[in-house]
Image (cartoon, rainbow, N blue to C red; front, top):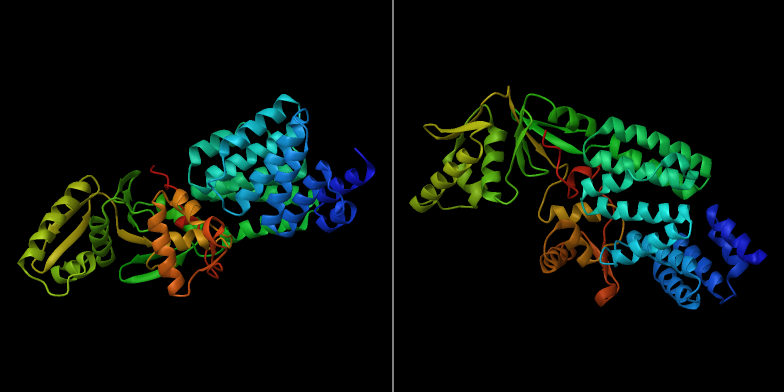
Length: 406
């Protein structure tokens, strides 16, 4: 490897893409193309970066398997940064296997971190945790150690383990400082914001207040019956009943929870759960049916009894009933929750992360765009959507992953 390539690689490792480009910007050999691609990625031109890396992979000979694998790993990182979750994961797995077989442990570890970050992004926490456990952070250089701890913190945050998240972020901050890369240090500080900004609203006894993630964790461990509007579950005493597939039942539970310890008039329940403006006997009959279903679903946690004017929710063993709501609510909230990370997403990636159809996501995006809440750039398969983050709020509880059930 010649001196210019070596110097450019060292510049990139130190987070100096401009310094790298000064050395290889006029060269079109395979190593230079790869380094130019990584430099463009660090500068934010992901489209150009992807094209350069693909050109580099083609330019390397079949005998240069390690170099090709490194290009694949770099392209996978760009796909992750651009939220292209449809990028072929098997290509990354094959590249990692090639790197491990040839003794390139550091780049193999980087590839594994990318796999874990993708799993985390789409809410597959168990798989992410298992894969991350196969990496020993003590054997990693500061850059990869910081990335490892950032992923560990992300998993802990999604599991509402705030102490573990703080410990991981403290280790990530130290490693990022040792690496001396400003962008990496900024990413760590950004992750700290999730611990120190409101994550949810607590509605109880007719009043509401904002909660930090630590407060939410404490609430889950309390003796309250929690109607969780972030995950669409009702939980108490280590037991949880999911109503994610029963939106009418959940809305009834939420209205009853917000009114506790009082009851809720039938007309109010009909308006909130069914959107009924003019109530007739068919609406009342349907309400009785749905209340019966809710009573059956919650029988181990609470009772739903009829009163003179409506219905009353009463916990079986819990001391109180509270509602945990998102910090900002509205239509298409799940789509907005993902977009508020400030990255650009494709509709297919959003559909994969949310576990729904691409057409459903496209309709939501069109509606949000018409309201001026999101914006698109690019065309056809290259179209991406993004929106500025909601100031002052963290989206940890809005992302697609189940809260702990016990």
